[in-house]
Length: 136
Figure 1 (tube, rainbow, N blue to C red):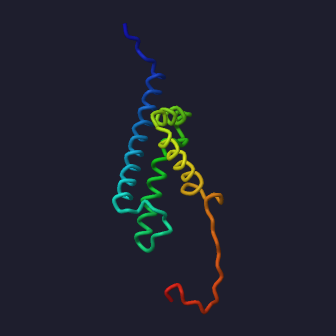
Figure 2: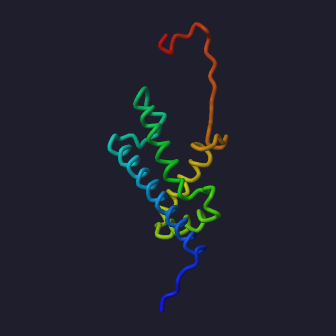
């Protein structure tokens, strides 16, 4: 004998399905960004690149970090569902994968989505006005 679900139960399942659908889309997009970075050899430190390569590398890296982290981040309108789904998505991770996941979350929260002084280190160097080292 099967029980019919209430409209409230159905709405909750629909909301969870929607959240999972978009989580899948985000992770797939992040995966494509990672594959592109690897294919181009752009998975090394950003500061080692210059010109348009640096720009493209930055764009793909930002997209990778932000879209990967999205399913694990609070989303308005999902009433705490993000935490349940985030825990489900992380469950099959190995120790190394969980370490990378946490690193991506830190990058997202402290560098890519917000400017946090903990991960941004700026060193200023003063040059005389006659210095011609910047392609002038």
